[in-house]
Length: 149
Image (cartoon, rainbow, N blue to C red):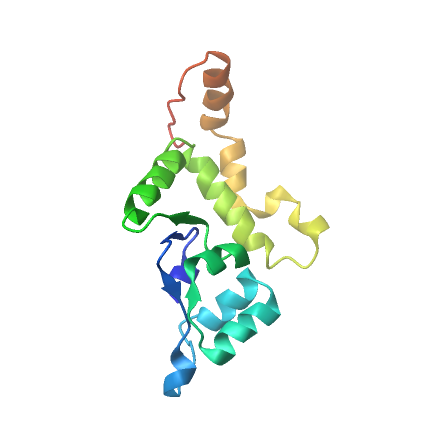
C-alpha cells in the first residue's frame, strides 16, 4: 500500500507487489484499494485485490503502476538517477505539476480542470523568478540557478 502512495515506483526486476490482506481476513484499508483502482484498469485492479495475487514487477510495469524497472540489486541506483533528474528541474515547477495533476482528478470536467487559476502552486510558479530563469538559462546554454521563488 505504501508504494501505491508514491509519485513514482522504481522496482527491482525480481520485486513482487500484492495487496494480500484478503488471505488473512482483512482488506487493504490504508488506501491500497482506492489507489490501485485509480492507477490501473478497474478489472485488473479487482483481479489483483480479490485474489490477493502477487504481481511480478514486470507485470506491474506493464499494468502501469510501476514507473521503471531496475536490474536486481540496482533499484536504489536507478532511483537515485531518477531523483537526480527531478532535482535538475525547478522545485516550483515540480510542486505545481504535482498539485495540478493531483487536484485536477477531483474536478468534474477537463474544461474546468484546464483553468490553471484553480491551483495556487501554478499561480505562484507563473509569477516566479524561476519562470524567468529557466528560459534565460536555456537561451544562454547553461544550467538554471533555481531560486524557488
